[in-house]
Length: 622
Image (cartoon, rainbow, N blue to C red):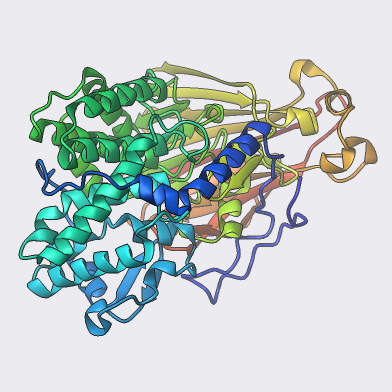
C-alpha cells in the first residue's frame, strides 16, 4: 500500500469553505502495479503517436474536402447564455476553474488559449471538445457568432494538425460532433476564407476519426469512451461525407459495443450513474441524427435506449440528481429530465439491478441506493472507485447520507482521495482501500487487489426491506470479510444496520493472512503477526445541508435536515464521533460532516473480527 501514513485527524476546514487544497488525511489510494496489458496498450499508443505527429500522417489526411453538409443534425440541448457572454469576453469556465484571456476579437490572432495546461485534463478536455459553442449560440448576436468563428480559426492555427491531447479520440469525436451540429450557427454569413478553412479542418479531423475503426488497442479507447467515439463517427459519415456504406459499418460496430457494454438490467458495465447519463444522451443524439438523415435507427440502438432509461431513473434521488457512485456527480436535474423525455422510454426503475450490482430501497419518502456489486471488468475501469457496499440515503428531496463524489476538475491528489474507500459511506480496515486502483491520466484505470466475490441477498416482509451484502476485498490483507446488513422499516422512519468483520469459514484471520500472502512482501500488507494496531473506520458522510450534533451519551448524533426534520444516529460496537469531510457532488468542493465509528479488530479469540450495530431513527413529526 502506498500513500501518506494514516491519520485520524481531518484537516481544518473552517477557513476554506469553498476551495480545499488537499483531501482529508487518511484518504489515500492503494496504487496497483501497472498490468502488462496496460503497458502494452501504452506502448502501442506511443508508437502510433510517433506516426500521428509526422508530416506524412498530415499528408494522408488530405483527400476530398466536403464542400457542404449533407444535413445538419439538430442540437436540442440548451446552452448557457451567461457563459456564452463570458466566453465572448474571454473567460472560459469549466470543471470548477476559470481562465481569462484577451478575446480574439481584440487581438485578431492566436492568444495562447489552446496551449494552456494550468487547470488539468478535465478543464482542457471541455475546452477542446467545443461543447460550449451552444453557449455562444444561445447568447445570440452577430458579435458572438463572429467570436465563435474567430475561436475556431484560432484553434485551427494552433491545433489543426495532430496533437496528443486535443486529438485524443473521445475529445476529437466530441469536437467533430459539436462543429457539425453548430454549422448553421457558424456558417451563416461566413466568408469564403473561413468556410474553406473550416471545412478543410473538419474533413481532416473526421478522416482521422473514421480511421480509428472499432477503437481497438492503442487508441486509449475503452467503455464509454469507445461509444462516444462512435457518435462522432456517425456524425462524420452521415452529415459530412454522406457515405452510407461507411455509416452502416459504424452502426454495426455500435450495435456490437452496445451488446457488450449494456448489461441485462440496462446498466452500463462501468457502473457509473454519470456515464449512464452520458451514454444515453449520446444514443438519443445518434438516433435523432439517423432519423434526420433518412436512416432507420438500428434495433440495437433503440433497444439500448429503452433499457438504459429506466436504469438512469434508478440512480436518481428525490431531488432529481444522480447518486454519487463511481466518479459521478449529481448532474442537473432539468437536463436529466430532458434526456429522459427525449429518450421516450417510459419504463419505471427496478428495485434491484443484479447485473449492475446496485439495489434501490424505497419506503414512504425514504430512499436508499446501495452498491452491492464487484468492480467492473477489464476495459471498463476508467471510473472505478473503491466504494463496495457503500450506500446513499435521501428523504424526499433532501440528501442525508452520501458518498463524497468524483471531482473530475480537481487535481490528482484529490482524485485519488475521492476514489478511496474512506470517501464512501462504508467500512474500511486500517484506512486501507477495498480495491487498489491504478490511474493513468488520459488512458484510464486498472485495478489490483479487489473484491473477487461480492454477494447480496434481499427480502421483504410486511413492507419492510432487508438487504445483506458481503465482499472479500479485505481477505487478502486482513483475513476478514466485510458483511453489511440493512433493514428499512415499511414506513421509512427507521434504518437499522449491522457491519460485521469476520473470517471466512470461522478461520483465524492471522492464519488466513499468512497463507494468502506467503509469497508477498509483508511490508506492503497488514502485518498481523507483528502485533501492530488493527482498527476499522465506519463512515457515514453527510450532505452539506445536514447539521450534526453529538449527544451526551457519546454514542449518538442528532441530525437536522434543511427542512427541520430530525434524525438520530446511534451505534454500538465502536467509538462514535463527528468529523469534518468534503462534498464535491454538486460541482463545488464544500465542507460537510461525517459520522465516524472506530474500533479495534480482534485477531484471535472466540469471535475474531468486529461487529458494529447502528440505527437511524426519525425523531419528531415528519
